[in-house]
Amino acid sequence: MFRILKKEKLAPAIYLMDIYSPRVAESAHPGQFVIVRVDEKGERVPLTIADYNKATGAVTIVIQTIGASTSKLCDLNEGDSVLDFVGPLGLPSDLCEMSDDELAQKRIIFVGGGLGAAPIYPQVKYLAERGFKPDVIIGAKTKEIEIMRPELEAVSANYYQATDDGSDGFHGMVTDCLKDLVQNHGKQYNHCVTIGPMIMMKFVAKLTQELGIFTIASLNTLMVDGTGMCGACRVSVGGKMRFTCVEGPEFDAHQVNFDEALRRQGMYRDFEKSRLEEYKNTAN
Image 1 (cartoon, helix red, strand yellow):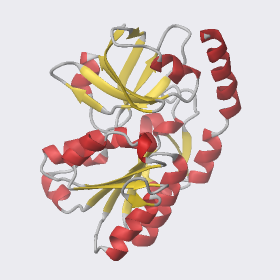
Image 2 (cartoon, rainbow, N blue to C red; image 1 turned 60 degrees about the vertical axis):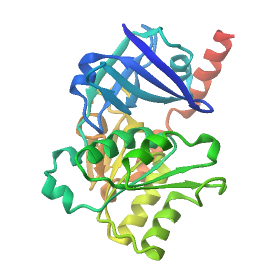
Image 3 (cartoon, helix red, strand yellow; image 1 turned 45 degrees about the vertical axis):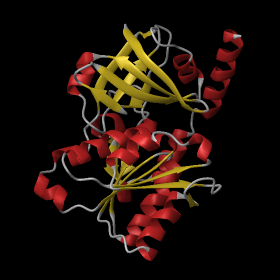
């Protein structure tokens, strides 16, 4: 069993948890993920690692209550435990493999939305610790659902908040913000990492291709079992079938077939909705 050391509500329906898992904390790298199972009847929930502390053995995850399994997980409190906490899984970020000389040649921008701020944080933190602070754009529908802003501001060179309704920062989508930085403020980037909703990453990739910025996308939302056995995470990259959980979760965004990924992501939406209603009725 893996004990919940900390639980914090970041925004409506979004929670941060620190889970005691020394082995995962010791081995984790930015970009990797874990599989969480609440109990013996629980589904496997893939969650990208949002932070880790080798000294305390704590691994940070951020969860949004979307379906039955995430709702059940978020109903737990500090001191409770989850049955399984498996990881680290997937490949670390390519940035971890680069030398200081290679990173010095990079002008990096991270573009995230929604829960994407959580997996972006360990990568930005890692770069800052090596002396290479990147720029960061994070989008949210409204100021109310912004997450991890103070943490990201502390480790980024420049932090840009974008909101759909203009309640905070740049009024518009993250793509509009990025285009404004490049075209109107003289920003020059040659490396972009985008993490967030699939539809957002699709349009970030389209824009960065037009701007000539190499881009990596994290497809963590496609995963189910995390081992490559179920095949649910299949995605076409450069015309070849790849498995997100064992060959990713990060891929060249300009080679990803986002339309196919979006269709695959929506296959079980009705089932997830019915399971959520079933869980709510049982819980009540």
